[in-house]
Image (cartoon, rainbow, N blue to C red; front, side, top):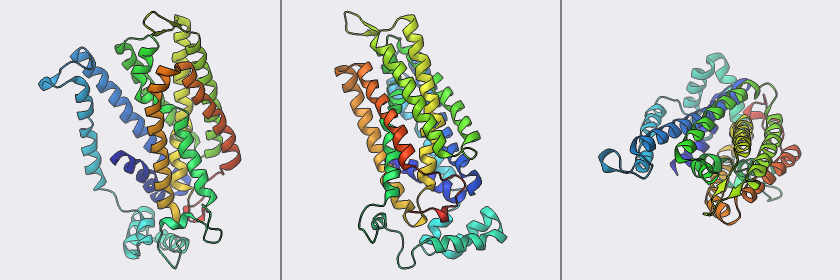
Length: 354
């Protein structure tokens, strides 16, 4: 619940304090930090498993190594808590709550006194004069229907998960063991995937405010579809031993590893950071908080469904069929983005249309 809240509020906060010309890069930094956190976790997990012998063996104080993997998360959580005390409140939030003087002070701190008054006026004009933001604003007051912009946000939130990225991150060690690698090798592959992800996010930083959000999403969808199809090919042509365990030849194993890491690159150049960039900036001020909350819920609920369904699918349908479904989602996402997603590069938050 805490991670879900932070994942929604962080891009909203960043987009509301960053200037429009660097907003995409600033929000992408969040994805870099997420991936760095994942990679550090992979390294810690590998170290603990190796030091204890296996992930299920007792380690410090007689506690199993896998439990220490969870306990280590308390350290960055504590750092995050302390760091949050050092940042100012969002000026858009302060205006929405009628705390105008505080908003003026924050804007002056962020943009300078000369620009603060003009921005404050724009922000105030972007909110409804007759009521503060509320959940019902997500419906068009005339038609009574859900605003199209919310459906676009839900599209981004759900398909970011339906392409199966968190199967790689959550079940990476299990996945590669199913494909014939040892636990130690599988944990090392996770580390490599994390490092590749970090490098890919730096590409996004260089491109997001230059070529825009929509082109990166389209590139990502096409790349993920191609690499997932390559993974399906490798898994479909592997052999199954007497114990029912999938085994890949040296050639197929190489194809699977290369395809998986290219898949991770395409995701982290595009859908990984860009979804959060767009959700943080695409909604008008009046509905941003409510819309982000709904889309964040959809993203994490989709995340949950994918995470819960993969073990059942892998056991019942096999890896090839399971990854065929993720590949199909990547193909569909390309056409949905082409049709329903509009570019937001360089547009001020106060000029976003709902």
